[in-house]
Length: 449
Figure 1 (cartoon, rainbow, N blue to C red):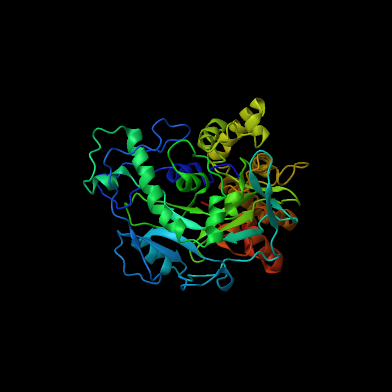
Figure 2: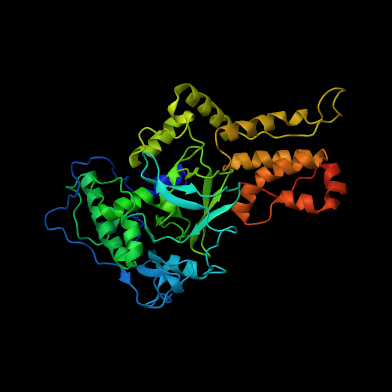
Protein backbone atom coordinates (compact mmCIF):
# COMPACT_ATOMS: atom_id res chain seq x y z
CA UNK A 1 0.00 0.00 0.00
CA UNK A 2 1.25 3.44 -0.89
CA UNK A 3 -1.01 6.13 0.36
CA UNK A 4 -2.62 8.19 3.08
CA UNK A 5 -5.65 6.29 4.39
CA UNK A 6 -8.49 8.60 5.35
CA UNK A 7 -12.21 8.70 5.80
CA UNK A 8 -13.28 11.89 4.01
CA UNK A 9 -11.60 15.03 2.78
CA UNK A 10 -12.50 16.62 6.12
CA UNK A 11 -10.90 13.72 7.96
CA UNK A 12 -7.82 13.98 5.77
CA UNK A 13 -7.31 17.59 6.76
CA UNK A 14 -7.63 16.66 10.42
CA UNK A 15 -5.25 13.71 10.26
CA UNK A 16 -2.60 15.73 8.46
CA UNK A 17 -2.70 18.65 10.90
CA UNK A 18 -0.85 18.95 14.21
CA UNK A 19 -2.83 19.29 17.41
CA UNK A 20 -2.21 20.32 20.99
CA UNK A 21 -0.59 18.02 23.53
CA UNK A 22 -1.98 20.25 26.28
CA UNK A 23 -4.66 22.56 24.87
CA UNK A 24 -4.05 26.28 25.38
CA UNK A 25 -7.07 28.42 24.51
CA UNK A 26 -4.80 31.30 23.48
CA UNK A 27 -2.59 29.20 21.21
CA UNK A 28 -4.79 26.71 19.37
CA UNK A 29 -4.21 27.77 15.76
CA UNK A 30 -3.19 24.72 13.73
CA UNK A 31 -0.52 24.76 11.07
CA UNK A 32 -0.72 22.55 7.99
CA UNK A 33 2.20 20.13 7.90
CA UNK A 34 4.38 20.08 4.79
CA UNK A 35 4.92 17.18 2.40
CA UNK A 36 7.28 16.36 -0.46
CA UNK A 37 10.90 17.52 -0.38
CA UNK A 38 11.36 20.11 2.40
CA UNK A 39 14.76 21.91 2.50
CA UNK A 40 14.51 22.53 6.26
CA UNK A 41 13.68 18.91 7.09
CA UNK A 42 15.01 17.93 10.51
CA UNK A 43 15.58 21.51 11.71
CA UNK A 44 15.92 22.18 15.45
CA UNK A 45 17.08 25.53 16.89
CA UNK A 46 20.45 25.68 18.62
CA UNK A 47 20.16 24.75 22.28
CA UNK A 48 16.64 23.37 21.83
CA UNK A 49 15.25 21.46 24.82
CA UNK A 50 12.11 19.32 24.71
CA UNK A 51 9.20 19.66 27.15
CA UNK A 52 8.53 16.92 29.65
CA UNK A 53 7.31 13.55 28.44
CA UNK A 54 3.70 12.58 29.09
CA UNK A 55 2.65 10.00 31.72
CA UNK A 56 3.40 6.32 31.10
CA UNK A 57 0.98 4.41 33.31
CA UNK A 58 1.65 1.01 34.83
CA UNK A 59 -1.98 0.18 35.66
CA UNK A 60 -4.10 0.37 32.48
CA UNK A 61 -7.34 0.12 34.52
CA UNK A 62 -6.60 3.37 36.32
CA UNK A 63 -9.06 6.15 35.43
CA UNK A 64 -7.81 8.64 38.00
CA UNK A 65 -6.12 11.00 35.53
CA UNK A 66 -6.59 14.68 34.92
CA UNK A 67 -8.73 15.15 31.79
CA UNK A 68 -6.01 17.48 30.46
CA UNK A 69 -3.12 15.04 30.89
CA UNK A 70 -1.97 12.71 28.12
CA UNK A 71 -0.98 9.15 28.98
CA UNK A 72 0.48 6.05 27.37
CA UNK A 73 -1.81 3.12 28.06
CA UNK A 74 -3.19 -0.14 26.70
CA UNK A 75 -6.78 -0.49 25.42
CA UNK A 76 -8.43 -2.72 26.45
CA UNK A 77 -6.48 -3.23 29.70
CA UNK A 78 -4.11 -6.21 29.67
CA UNK A 79 -2.21 -7.92 32.47
CA UNK A 80 1.58 -7.85 32.32
CA UNK A 81 2.99 -10.74 30.29
CA UNK A 82 -0.22 -11.58 28.41
CA UNK A 83 0.16 -12.69 24.78
CA UNK A 84 -2.10 -12.49 21.74
CA UNK A 85 -3.24 -16.10 22.12
CA UNK A 86 -4.83 -15.20 25.46
CA UNK A 87 -6.40 -11.96 24.21
CA UNK A 88 -9.04 -12.37 21.46
CA UNK A 89 -8.90 -9.34 19.21
CA UNK A 90 -5.59 -8.19 20.68
CA UNK A 91 -5.02 -4.75 22.15
CA UNK A 92 -3.92 -1.27 21.16
CA UNK A 93 -1.06 0.88 22.41
CA UNK A 94 -2.49 4.36 22.95
CA UNK A 95 -1.46 7.91 23.68
CA UNK A 96 -4.74 9.50 24.80
CA UNK A 97 -6.03 12.13 27.19
CA UNK A 98 -7.40 11.29 30.61
CA UNK A 99 -10.79 12.50 29.39
CA UNK A 100 -10.81 10.19 26.35
CA UNK A 101 -9.71 7.21 28.42
CA UNK A 102 -12.66 7.69 30.75
CA UNK A 103 -15.04 8.02 27.78
CA UNK A 104 -13.74 4.74 26.35
CA UNK A 105 -14.05 2.80 29.61
CA UNK A 106 -17.52 4.18 30.35
CA UNK A 107 -18.89 3.22 26.92
CA UNK A 108 -21.68 0.61 27.33
CA UNK A 109 -20.44 -2.84 26.34
CA UNK A 110 -16.73 -2.00 26.50
CA UNK A 111 -14.56 -4.00 25.96
CA UNK A 112 -16.51 -6.07 23.46
CA UNK A 113 -14.50 -8.58 21.40
CA UNK A 114 -14.26 -7.58 17.71
CA UNK A 115 -16.68 -9.43 15.43
CA UNK A 116 -15.69 -12.43 13.33
CA UNK A 117 -17.08 -12.53 9.76
CA UNK A 118 -19.91 -15.09 9.73
CA UNK A 119 -18.33 -17.17 6.95
CA UNK A 120 -14.72 -16.85 8.07
CA UNK A 121 -11.81 -14.91 6.64
CA UNK A 122 -12.44 -13.72 3.10
CA UNK A 123 -9.25 -11.89 2.12
CA UNK A 124 -5.49 -12.10 1.71
CA UNK A 125 -2.78 -9.45 1.69
CA UNK A 126 -0.72 -9.53 -1.50
CA UNK A 127 1.09 -7.50 -4.12
CA UNK A 128 -0.95 -4.84 -5.91
CA UNK A 129 0.52 -3.59 -9.18
CA UNK A 130 2.14 -0.20 -8.65
CA UNK A 131 0.61 0.18 -5.20
CA UNK A 132 2.79 -1.93 -2.93
CA UNK A 133 0.56 -4.38 -1.08
CA UNK A 134 -3.22 -4.59 -1.10
CA UNK A 135 -6.17 -6.64 0.14
CA UNK A 136 -7.81 -9.19 -2.18
CA UNK A 137 -10.95 -11.30 -1.86
CA UNK A 138 -10.37 -15.06 -1.54
CA UNK A 139 -14.06 -15.92 -1.97
CA UNK A 140 -17.16 -14.08 -3.18
CA UNK A 141 -18.16 -11.29 -0.81
CA UNK A 142 -21.71 -9.97 -0.93
CA UNK A 143 -22.66 -6.33 -0.58
CA UNK A 144 -23.17 -5.58 3.09
CA UNK A 145 -20.93 -8.42 4.31
CA UNK A 146 -18.44 -7.80 7.10
CA UNK A 147 -14.93 -8.30 5.70
CA UNK A 148 -13.01 -7.78 8.94
CA UNK A 149 -13.21 -6.10 12.34
CA UNK A 150 -9.75 -5.07 13.56
CA UNK A 151 -8.29 -3.32 16.58
CA UNK A 152 -5.53 -0.83 15.79
CA UNK A 153 -1.86 -1.38 16.48
CA UNK A 154 -1.62 2.23 17.63
CA UNK A 155 -3.90 5.17 18.48
CA UNK A 156 -2.37 8.59 19.06
CA UNK A 157 -3.05 12.32 18.69
CA UNK A 158 -2.49 13.68 15.22
CA UNK A 159 0.35 15.89 16.39
CA UNK A 160 1.71 18.54 18.74
CA UNK A 161 1.33 22.23 17.96
CA UNK A 162 3.92 24.86 18.54
CA UNK A 163 1.35 26.27 20.98
CA UNK A 164 2.14 23.44 23.42
CA UNK A 165 5.77 24.55 23.46
CA UNK A 166 4.87 28.21 23.86
CA UNK A 167 2.68 27.35 26.83
CA UNK A 168 5.80 26.03 28.57
CA UNK A 169 7.74 29.23 27.83
CA UNK A 170 10.82 27.34 26.70
CA UNK A 171 11.18 28.64 23.18
CA UNK A 172 11.14 32.02 21.46
CA UNK A 173 9.47 31.41 18.10
CA UNK A 174 9.64 34.99 16.84
CA UNK A 175 12.84 34.28 14.91
CA UNK A 176 11.57 30.98 13.48
CA UNK A 177 9.88 30.54 10.13
CA UNK A 178 6.62 28.64 9.86
CA UNK A 179 8.47 25.66 8.41
CA UNK A 180 11.01 25.65 11.24
CA UNK A 181 8.13 25.58 13.72
CA UNK A 182 6.59 22.69 11.80
CA UNK A 183 9.85 20.77 12.07
CA UNK A 184 9.81 21.21 15.86
CA UNK A 185 6.23 19.94 15.89
CA UNK A 186 7.27 16.84 13.94
CA UNK A 187 10.25 16.25 16.24
CA UNK A 188 8.11 16.41 19.39
CA UNK A 189 5.34 14.30 17.91
CA UNK A 190 7.80 11.60 16.86
CA UNK A 191 9.65 11.60 20.18
CA UNK A 192 6.45 11.09 22.15
CA UNK A 193 4.83 8.49 19.92
CA UNK A 194 8.02 6.40 19.84
CA UNK A 195 7.22 5.57 23.47
CA UNK A 196 3.94 3.95 22.40
CA UNK A 197 5.67 2.08 19.56
CA UNK A 198 8.31 0.75 21.95
CA UNK A 199 5.51 -0.67 24.12
CA UNK A 200 4.20 -2.85 21.25
CA UNK A 201 4.82 -6.58 21.04
CA UNK A 202 7.74 -7.28 18.67
CA UNK A 203 5.41 -8.72 16.02
CA UNK A 204 3.10 -5.72 16.12
CA UNK A 205 6.00 -3.28 16.00
CA UNK A 206 7.40 -5.15 12.98
CA UNK A 207 4.00 -4.97 11.23
CA UNK A 208 3.83 -1.23 11.93
CA UNK A 209 7.32 -0.55 10.57
CA UNK A 210 6.56 -2.57 7.42
CA UNK A 211 3.81 -0.11 6.45
CA UNK A 212 4.60 2.35 3.69
CA UNK A 213 5.99 5.81 4.51
CA UNK A 214 5.24 8.53 1.96
CA UNK A 215 6.94 11.27 4.03
CA UNK A 216 10.65 10.42 3.77
CA UNK A 217 11.86 13.88 2.72
CA UNK A 218 9.84 16.35 4.79
CA UNK A 219 11.33 15.85 8.26
CA UNK A 220 8.51 13.65 9.49
CA UNK A 221 10.61 10.66 10.56
CA UNK A 222 9.98 6.95 10.18
CA UNK A 223 7.29 6.63 12.88
CA UNK A 224 5.25 9.76 12.23
CA UNK A 225 5.69 9.28 8.48
CA UNK A 226 3.85 5.97 8.76
CA UNK A 227 1.15 7.56 10.89
CA UNK A 228 0.62 10.40 8.39
CA UNK A 229 0.57 7.88 5.53
CA UNK A 230 -1.63 5.22 7.10
CA UNK A 231 -3.61 6.94 9.86
CA UNK A 232 -7.39 6.68 9.90
CA UNK A 233 -9.30 9.10 12.06
CA UNK A 234 -11.13 7.33 14.90
CA UNK A 235 -14.08 8.94 16.61
CA UNK A 236 -12.81 9.45 20.15
CA UNK A 237 -14.70 12.30 21.78
CA UNK A 238 -12.47 14.93 23.34
CA UNK A 239 -13.67 17.68 25.65
CA UNK A 240 -15.60 20.52 23.95
CA UNK A 241 -13.17 23.00 22.44
CA UNK A 242 -10.14 20.70 22.53
CA UNK A 243 -8.48 20.95 19.09
CA UNK A 244 -7.58 17.29 19.15
CA UNK A 245 -8.25 14.35 16.85
CA UNK A 246 -6.83 10.84 16.95
CA UNK A 247 -5.30 8.64 14.26
CA UNK A 248 -5.40 4.83 14.29
CA UNK A 249 -3.00 2.52 12.42
CA UNK A 250 -3.84 -1.11 11.59
CA UNK A 251 -2.00 -4.27 10.56
CA UNK A 252 -4.37 -5.36 7.77
CA UNK A 253 -6.78 -2.47 7.22
CA UNK A 254 -3.84 -0.15 6.59
CA UNK A 255 -3.01 -2.33 3.55
CA UNK A 256 -6.27 -1.46 1.79
CA UNK A 257 -5.66 0.73 -1.26
CA UNK A 258 -7.60 3.73 -2.51
CA UNK A 259 -10.31 3.94 -5.14
CA UNK A 260 -12.58 6.90 -5.96
CA UNK A 261 -15.38 4.36 -6.49
CA UNK A 262 -14.55 1.93 -3.67
CA UNK A 263 -16.18 -1.44 -3.03
CA UNK A 264 -15.83 -1.21 0.76
CA UNK A 265 -16.17 1.27 3.61
CA UNK A 266 -15.44 1.34 7.33
CA UNK A 267 -17.11 2.28 10.59
CA UNK A 268 -15.46 2.83 13.98
CA UNK A 269 -16.94 1.11 17.07
CA UNK A 270 -15.75 2.37 20.43
CA UNK A 271 -17.27 -0.48 22.50
CA UNK A 272 -15.00 -3.00 20.74
CA UNK A 273 -12.30 -0.37 20.07
CA UNK A 274 -12.12 -1.55 16.49
CA UNK A 275 -12.79 -0.63 12.87
CA UNK A 276 -15.15 -2.72 10.75
CA UNK A 277 -14.78 -3.03 6.99
CA UNK A 278 -17.96 -3.78 5.02
CA UNK A 279 -18.47 -4.46 1.32
CA UNK A 280 -20.63 -1.80 -0.34
CA UNK A 281 -21.16 -3.93 -3.45
CA UNK A 282 -20.42 -7.52 -4.46
CA UNK A 283 -16.69 -8.34 -4.60
CA UNK A 284 -15.51 -11.24 -6.76
CA UNK A 285 -12.77 -13.78 -6.03
CA UNK A 286 -9.36 -12.19 -6.65
CA UNK A 287 -10.81 -8.67 -6.81
CA UNK A 288 -9.01 -6.01 -4.79
CA UNK A 289 -10.85 -4.62 -1.76
CA UNK A 290 -10.67 -0.81 -1.84
CA UNK A 291 -11.74 2.13 0.31
CA UNK A 292 -11.66 5.88 -0.34
CA UNK A 293 -9.00 8.15 1.16
CA UNK A 294 -10.80 11.29 0.02
CA UNK A 295 -14.32 12.63 -0.40
CA UNK A 296 -15.70 10.49 -3.23
CA UNK A 297 -18.39 13.08 -3.93
CA UNK A 298 -15.81 15.80 -4.64
CA UNK A 299 -14.79 16.82 -8.16
CA UNK A 300 -11.76 15.15 -9.73
CA UNK A 301 -9.50 18.17 -9.14
CA UNK A 302 -10.41 18.27 -5.44
CA UNK A 303 -9.82 14.53 -5.07
CA UNK A 304 -6.45 14.86 -6.79
CA UNK A 305 -5.41 17.63 -4.40
CA UNK A 306 -6.36 15.47 -1.42
CA UNK A 307 -4.41 12.47 -2.71
CA UNK A 308 -1.25 14.28 -3.89
CA UNK A 309 0.47 14.49 -0.46
CA UNK A 310 0.42 10.70 -0.32
CA UNK A 311 2.14 10.02 -3.62
CA UNK A 312 -1.00 9.29 -5.65
CA UNK A 313 -0.08 11.54 -8.59
CA UNK A 314 -2.15 11.25 -10.67
CA UNK A 315 -4.95 9.01 -9.47
CA UNK A 316 -5.75 6.40 -12.13
CA UNK A 317 -8.18 4.26 -10.16
CA UNK A 318 -10.98 4.64 -12.72
CA UNK A 319 -11.82 6.39 -16.02
CA UNK A 320 -13.49 9.16 -14.00
CA UNK A 321 -9.96 10.08 -12.86
CA UNK A 322 -7.75 9.19 -15.83
CA UNK A 323 -9.97 9.97 -18.85
CA UNK A 324 -10.58 13.70 -19.38
CA UNK A 325 -13.95 13.32 -21.11
CA UNK A 326 -15.28 10.80 -18.60
CA UNK A 327 -13.90 12.88 -15.76
CA UNK A 328 -16.03 15.84 -16.88
CA UNK A 329 -19.12 13.62 -16.97
CA UNK A 330 -18.30 12.26 -13.52
CA UNK A 331 -17.83 15.78 -12.13
CA UNK A 332 -21.21 16.87 -13.49
CA UNK A 333 -22.84 13.80 -11.98
CA UNK A 334 -21.24 14.32 -8.59
CA UNK A 335 -22.41 17.92 -8.57
CA UNK A 336 -25.96 16.66 -9.03
CA UNK A 337 -25.49 13.94 -6.41
CA UNK A 338 -24.39 16.58 -3.89
CA UNK A 339 -27.31 18.90 -4.60
CA UNK A 340 -30.78 18.70 -3.07
CA UNK A 341 -31.95 15.08 -3.35
CA UNK A 342 -34.84 14.13 -5.58
CA UNK A 343 -38.13 14.08 -3.67
CA UNK A 344 -40.70 11.69 -5.11
CA UNK A 345 -44.40 12.36 -4.51
CA UNK A 346 -47.23 10.02 -5.55
CA UNK A 347 -49.34 11.40 -8.43
CA UNK A 348 -52.73 12.82 -7.51
CA UNK A 349 -54.52 10.90 -10.28
CA UNK A 350 -53.94 7.37 -11.61
CA UNK A 351 -51.64 7.13 -14.68
CA UNK A 352 -53.25 7.44 -18.09
CA UNK A 353 -53.85 4.33 -20.16
CA UNK A 354 -50.60 2.90 -21.48
CA UNK A 355 -48.46 4.82 -18.99
CA UNK A 356 -46.35 2.98 -16.41
CA UNK A 357 -47.66 3.31 -12.88
CA UNK A 358 -44.10 3.96 -11.64
CA UNK A 359 -43.21 6.58 -14.26
CA UNK A 360 -42.98 9.24 -11.57
CA UNK A 361 -40.09 7.28 -9.98
CA UNK A 362 -37.86 7.33 -13.08
CA UNK A 363 -35.71 10.34 -12.01
CA UNK A 364 -34.65 8.47 -8.87
CA UNK A 365 -34.08 5.22 -10.77
CA UNK A 366 -31.79 7.04 -13.22
CA UNK A 367 -29.93 8.75 -10.37
CA UNK A 368 -29.32 5.44 -8.61
CA UNK A 369 -28.00 3.87 -11.82
CA UNK A 370 -25.59 6.76 -12.34
CA UNK A 371 -24.27 6.44 -8.79
CA UNK A 372 -23.70 2.72 -9.36
CA UNK A 373 -21.78 3.51 -12.56
CA UNK A 374 -19.55 5.83 -10.49
CA UNK A 375 -19.08 3.21 -7.75
CA UNK A 376 -20.73 5.32 -5.06
CA UNK A 377 -22.87 2.65 -3.38
CA UNK A 378 -21.38 3.46 0.01
CA UNK A 379 -22.53 7.08 0.08
CA UNK A 380 -25.44 8.66 1.92
CA UNK A 381 -27.12 9.99 -1.29
CA UNK A 382 -27.16 6.43 -2.67
CA UNK A 383 -28.82 5.07 0.48
CA UNK A 384 -31.31 7.94 0.54
CA UNK A 385 -32.28 7.33 -3.09
CA UNK A 386 -32.62 3.56 -2.59
CA UNK A 387 -34.79 4.22 0.46
CA UNK A 388 -37.10 6.48 -1.55
CA UNK A 389 -37.48 3.81 -4.23
CA UNK A 390 -38.17 1.19 -1.58
CA UNK A 391 -40.93 3.43 -0.28
CA UNK A 392 -42.30 4.08 -3.77
CA UNK A 393 -42.73 0.40 -4.56
CA UNK A 394 -44.12 -0.27 -1.11
CA UNK A 395 -46.73 2.39 -1.91
CA UNK A 396 -47.42 0.73 -5.28
CA UNK A 397 -47.70 -2.69 -3.58
CA UNK A 398 -44.94 -4.09 -5.83
CA UNK A 399 -43.18 -6.35 -3.34
CA UNK A 400 -40.62 -7.63 -5.87
CA UNK A 401 -39.28 -4.17 -6.66
CA UNK A 402 -39.65 -3.04 -3.05
CA UNK A 403 -37.34 -5.89 -2.06
CA UNK A 404 -34.99 -5.11 -4.97
CA UNK A 405 -34.41 -1.57 -3.72
CA UNK A 406 -34.64 -2.63 -0.09
CA UNK A 407 -31.63 -4.88 -0.57
CA UNK A 408 -29.74 -1.98 -2.10
CA UNK A 409 -30.35 0.22 0.92
CA UNK A 410 -29.79 -2.55 3.48
CA UNK A 411 -26.01 -2.24 3.27
CA UNK A 412 -26.03 1.21 4.82
CA UNK A 413 -28.65 0.14 7.37
CA UNK A 414 -26.43 -2.74 8.49
CA UNK A 415 -23.26 -0.69 8.46
CA UNK A 416 -24.71 2.33 10.24
CA UNK A 417 -27.06 0.62 12.67
CA UNK A 418 -25.97 -3.01 12.85
CA UNK A 419 -29.64 -3.99 12.45
CA UNK A 420 -31.57 -6.36 10.23
CA UNK A 421 -32.40 -4.74 6.89
CA UNK A 422 -35.85 -3.31 6.25
CA UNK A 423 -36.28 -5.56 3.22
CA UNK A 424 -36.16 -8.63 5.45
CA UNK A 425 -38.90 -7.12 7.59
CA UNK A 426 -41.08 -6.70 4.50
CA UNK A 427 -40.40 -10.25 3.37
CA UNK A 428 -41.15 -11.79 6.76
CA UNK A 429 -44.31 -9.85 7.61
CA UNK A 430 -47.24 -10.44 5.29
CA UNK A 431 -49.45 -8.10 7.31
CA UNK A 432 -47.22 -5.22 6.17
CA UNK A 433 -48.44 -5.69 2.59
CA UNK A 434 -52.09 -5.77 3.57
CA UNK A 435 -51.84 -3.08 6.23
CA UNK A 436 -52.40 0.63 6.03
CA UNK A 437 -48.77 1.44 5.19
CA UNK A 438 -49.09 0.08 1.67
CA UNK A 439 -52.28 2.00 1.01
CA UNK A 440 -51.13 5.30 2.51
CA UNK A 441 -47.51 5.22 1.37
CA UNK A 442 -46.36 5.93 4.95
CA UNK A 443 -42.57 6.23 5.09
CA UNK A 444 -40.46 3.49 6.61
CA UNK A 445 -38.76 4.60 9.84
CA UNK A 446 -35.21 4.62 8.46
CA UNK A 447 -33.06 7.70 7.91
CA UNK A 448 -29.58 8.46 6.59
CA UNK A 449 -27.93 11.75 7.51
